[in-house]
Length: 122
Length: 113
Image 1 (cartoon, helix red, strand yellow):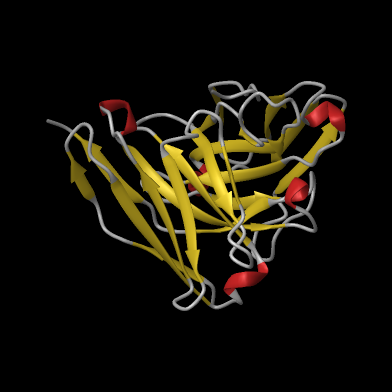
Image 2 (image 1 turned 90 degrees about the vertical axis):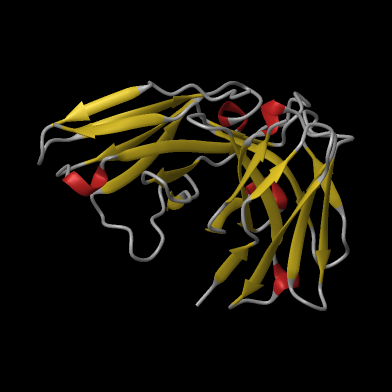
């Protein structure tokens, strides 16, 4: 059974950095891209970026470029998403999601983590 | 910022058929990229519903179907059931360098009357 288990909720002050983990089991970690998706309260889904666990290559959405770092640790089958310079607008649930598809162009999000709520408040 | 447009809400009585549209542009759906659909029940993570425009993952009832034409796609739910009450999102790839390779729809809330 495929499982993506994320770390717990975080409360951060403006300007701080948060790092969320996503531990994978049930498939070969390096076989698929890992994506991160943001969902602000009552809002829709927004793609943040991806990592190819096989070689560590990353692609980020322009909106988050410069503030987000996505990594993959193949020794523990865990992906991480770090978001810096936090502001109130970053208060959201963050999901990791396995990208499946013949190429990254055809990727869709087959498996999802349970989500991690990050609250940014002074 | 969503570049795929969906109606904010649709509703139907149990047993009825509802459809959700997803309108894109020449840099995403119109460019031939696949459309995928997700169902998000209240308080839970999204779940893959349709991939590759019209394919259902194992375990998804055949009441759900997807189609694509031109710059738009649609999700149909036939024989609407109470458990179908959820938010639905379409998703595609975008080549416009608009800032995001993967774009989601604005989301549609389905209400079962």
